[in-house]
Length: 258
Ligand code: FAD
Image (cartoon, rainbow, N blue to C red; front, side, top):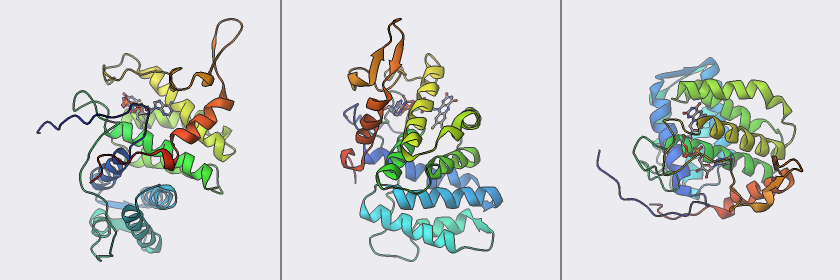
């Protein structure tokens, strides 16, 4: 593989290029591992695409494509779909004007110092944080809609199997605590920090991007408080607005897009 040039980026911003790269990899590479979708896998695929069509804060051209794929999938009633048929729609075989998902990956905020670091798994986290925040700000009706779609996607399709197992354990332990759209945002943030904590010092940690309990005090000092006994404590009343702003559609940078 040829080395890509490093793309300078702001470490405290979200990039649309990472989100589109994640969709590319998810829809064209990860899902392609399954020749047919049926039963549980088909239900998971439908839910995932429907959440994307509803909440992905994408460019019009990408949204047109996601909506096309979504209506095709939801109208499909034979109980079975081949990846080939899915791919046909994804590549816009009907040639609907202004509907396309850019081909290939262009990692920006998810670049790693080596090709095996960061990238797609980083993009998956980014994508689902953005989706929980979008569901919250557009007033979704079911607090678990996005997280259940993520759970099922990870369970059925995420290539990293130990990751899927760890994630499912956290889901079973505490997903029932989520009872509002804002608690869904906070749940994903706090589980992501648990994963960061577990992976500190692991082989998969990019030495140039050490795992931290996120956001750092530099990014959000009000998010952090210290108890009388000196123990660290998150100030959730500050963390929530921080997350809602950090992952909001209006904060997403469009640098490096095709
Ligand atoms: P990531 O953890 O991927 O985070 C991406 C970006 O999100 C960060 O750069 C930061 O900007 C932001 N961020 C960081 N923490 C938070 C937070 N708490 N809330 C909101 N935003 C945050 N790898 C393993 O080795 N073992 C596992 O069991 C494992 N399980 C995983 C489960 C899931 C569901 C996913 C999506 C990934 C999993 N991974 C696992 C991969 C791992 O979590 C990282 O994605 C990977 O190591 C790349 O790390 P990163 O430095 O890019 O940061």
